[in-house]
Image (cartoon, rainbow, N blue to C red; front, side, top):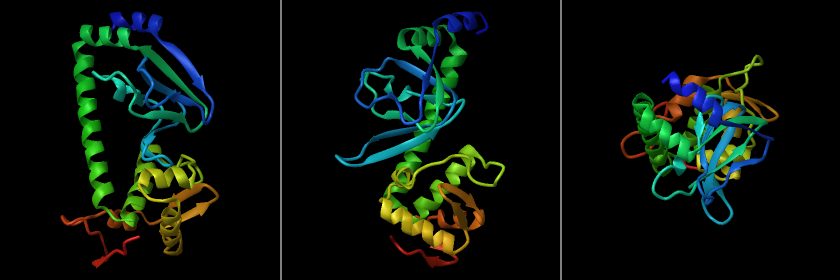
Length: 225
């Protein structure tokens, strides 16, 4: 509600994080919620003792830290700045008071949670059933759809192969092998860490699954990595 805008201005805190810095860490006590003003962030969690699984990427206008809101008040994931990032932080007590006083905001947040849950379930299904090439293709399409392309035609986010492998649920070696196949097929082109999709329809074909989880390209089963 308009009356709450001044209150939010009073209670919010803008924070700056350099590239590579942690915004919040898995297992820490929940302090509040973060709204990204500028920059890009990866949300990740420990998969085992040596590996991280990237849950999602966030950009300007996105919310991070909401997974910690609940009965168990610890963050189940970590958030790390992929580039210099500015966030707006609102502490828990004021955020909860804002939701109680603003039913429209609470309703919109409920829809946001619902959409995020559906996306998380879809990703888990893909990680379980989809072959490596399908997951890599889906990752590249997601990055393009989420971050767009720059003036040079490359996806407008710079990531390491390790981060993209982590999001795809593959090893670094498998991700490299799959992207090399895509380069040879002229489906993508790479310049350093920059990636451009040249045949988007081909990538979309690779993500189409039958009900048994087998993925097809041009009517033939794709090779499992």
